[in-house]
Image (cartoon, rainbow, N blue to C red):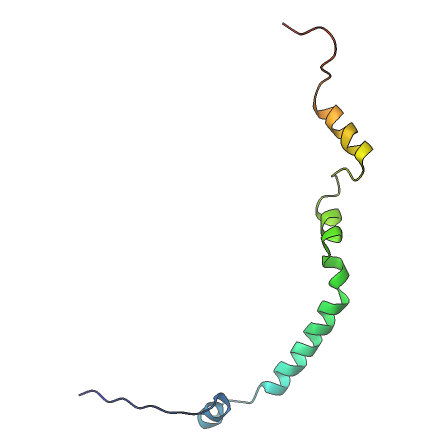
Length: 82
C-alpha cells in the first residue's frame, strides 16, 4: 500500500505546527549587525589593501622592481664563464 500526503503551508505555518520558535527577529538583528561590521571593514578588503597586506615584500615602484631583478639575476656583462 502506498499513501501520499501533500501539505501546502508556509514555513511559518510549519514552524508553528511543529512548535518550533520564531527565529525571524533574532535573524534580522544578526543580519543588521553583520551588515554594519562588513560596511565598517570594507576598506580593508580593497584590492590595494589586500595586496599590501598579503605581499609586503613585493616591490612597489619601478626602481624597486629593477633592483629586485638585478639582485636575482647575475650580471651578464663581462667574460663568459666556462
